Image 1 (cartoon, rainbow, N blue to C red):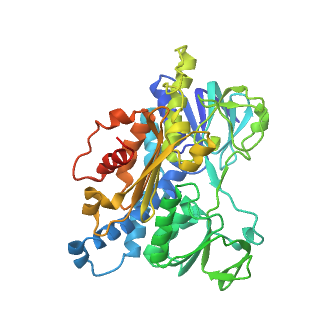
Image 2 (image 1 turned 120 degrees about the vertical axis):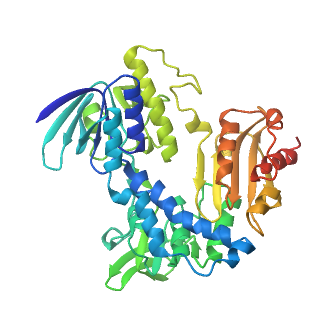
Image 3 (image 1 turned 90 degrees about the vertical axis):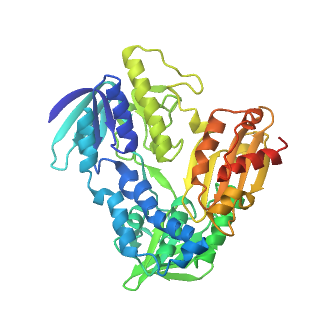
Length: 475
């Protein structure tokens, strides 16, 4: 057994852990990062990058087919082999050499192996060769271990070798028939991708398709999936799953049996804290509760000395960009506390993650795409806000019409009349992704509608939707 000491030890070398370590080192502290798999984490190899690489070809072909001149030049279908090859490049062929090189270049120490807390500010790392290294942190340990796919307790499912998001994203060939269980973002994006690539897709969405977005946006996506030949089964409930030599068989509660080549289960995530040694610091496995500066809280709501958690593992916002935002705040506040610098922990301060509560941007790369920031009408109501929804036909905006003949889409804002600000934005339609940051700035900046009126959108762009929404709101 060997022992080493650093100012900060981070467990998990995904984008969140990397960003914590980077901010710590920039602040003049030393950092070691522990990783049991690939440096770069879920996003780099099994989520953000490869999934969007799959979906980009789908979106490009759709965009071309909606323009008569470009459509006339298209004579074939997607080249599945080429699509998968490009995906492989974006996943770095599941090698992390480049990420490791970056760690070394900025002075971050990488320790490969399974990291567990063995005492306060102490991490024991067991390598693949069985060698044990003990890392002691002078100032902080940061948990950035992320999440894994959760399998629902459907009889037979665990023994049926189901796909999770990892297998769906890294598959080297296309199943003839893919069944998907789960109507959230992963299931919907993979239904979009696999149907466009030529697979027959059955989409089983017991609780609805994209139930957390505005209903009108989800309806646009369902209509598009069905038009593409996807069988969307809203409300269907799997009762049992079995696999044999012929494939996978999903028995539904109503007696129907779905026969498929593969089944993708996309019903949620679970925190990677089960074997993390949390008992050695007075905690139990599960989602880690944190304060606004990302310090882990115990059962009584008291910060655990020297322990932070950033990214998906704290359940505040299961999105890579939001985890990286948390990482920047966590790294900076650890440096501040270590060096005696004042902590800026007022709302919207440098060392807090206020946006997690008020201005989370999200893009769902379906066909059509969905973007959202802040509240939906349902979440605003649940939060006790009194809001006024305003909607507008995105297809009536000149900039949208230029993107595609027969453009269909919709956008909405939620106005808090008490503050004269926007607290929610949603848009659905082709190519709406670039609308998201303008909405994020408006909501995070708490820009009043009176001031937004002076933010003149360029013509003819899709951003003209902001003018139309403000006009509809009576401005």
